[in-house]
Image 1 (cartoon, rainbow, N blue to C red):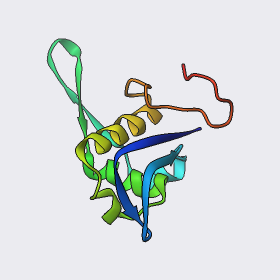
Image 2: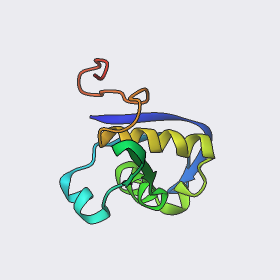
Image 3: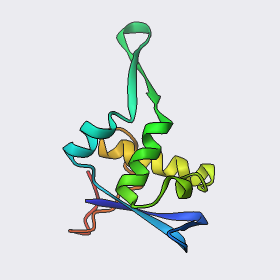
Length: 109
């Protein structure tokens, strides 16, 4: 499964302007080498708060999207936030609204 995001502002990657970014699903190797994109912090009433690790998310965008870090740094905040939601969705977090299943064209559950 992969997620394709339509960028609200194009960026330059590998010398070309791109208006959409496809993120492939991470593998165990990616997780072992990059780590978790979030930390769970203890909160009140036995609940947890989620701390999103933006530097780790950026590394996932580089690896899963096949673009250099300099291109990630060009993303406007709306597009970066969309990437965060997509990546968190791979880890069971997020609203799933940005997911698309390229192999079956069925809505995600």
